[in-house]
Length: 499
Image (cartoon, rainbow, N blue to C red; front, side, top):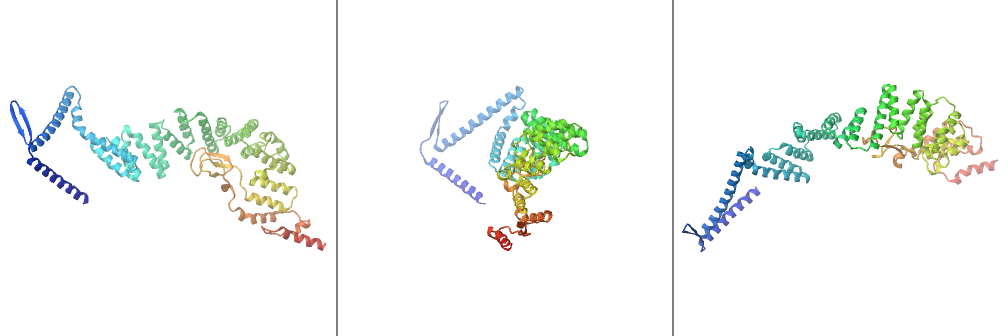
């Protein structure tokens, strides 16, 4: 309403200004004299202005007719679209102006304005391959998923825009959580443009989530072929996929294929610990223990790991603890100063009941690099050497509230996994799990301090050692958590006086 009133006021003002100007010209003196073929024409001021306007219009019409004449000549010479282009030139100008304004609105985040400009551009240009793309992206921007899907489906119907339409529908299905449909669309987009890096990554991620390891390996090979992946990264990730494929074959009971796949995965990436463990078990199952030993020693040299030690133990499962300690020396001699090697050697000595040897093996790890595993080993050493229950409980209390040590942690989201997987269970990233110590606030056992009385009680219930020493008689079944030194010594002084 207000805009209409403003337009009316402007129109009346313009008419009034023209009327006032015409009256002023009629009252003024002078004019223009024109001589044509010996005849003199005199024009007054108002007539002169009108003649000038007519002259401008005549010149404009002349140029238009001249352009039309040129278009006719081109048509006669064989240009079939020359005349149609002449008449559509103004429409194209308006259409491309609307198209550029739509692109600017889309870049500025004005989705609804971009949709309006795209509709106007389509009205003048009739080029849906351009305007539909702006409309679809603008509809996504304003949250109109139905409109965007409708436009993407139209883009799929044309050869020149089919890839854009399929990719747009794929992204919509991913946002909606429909991974099955998104996988099919990703495969279709990959078939149209196999060099497109975004489509390659999306397809690889979806295939890995669906455990389509064979298809994922083909996609990975395509990334290498088209230069989207370095060769060393390709070997590592292909080994991860081969390992995942081997694990699935193991679950299906195809032992021969599983052995070959596991060994191939280890050869592709010797530093991949799960592949080394699985390949070693495959060699053992195939009665080739020497190959398993050589493989595990090579992997242990790269990075000592509990899974490698477990696979090494399975080579001779029925040996005595003393024989196992002796056999494991060929493994513990590699990287002897590594933390995992020292912990493994301490555990082997504990199993063989060589408690001084276990203490020498663990060294100062419990003081300088403590975690629940090292502190638990120290508790077992103290128990084996005959230390008091109070000392053992002290080590276990520290173990309960200490970090758990290295685990499988996602490099992207720091999520902790109980066992290695090719895909992070939290963020869905591929090949991001590393064996390392997580942040301390994530690695401490939940409720450690609250569970401490229960652990101490369980130790006392399971303890079979007698308490003949006088100091053991003063230990209460449930000792207080905070107690002064003087309070502890009072019962000892009274016992001495009584004696």
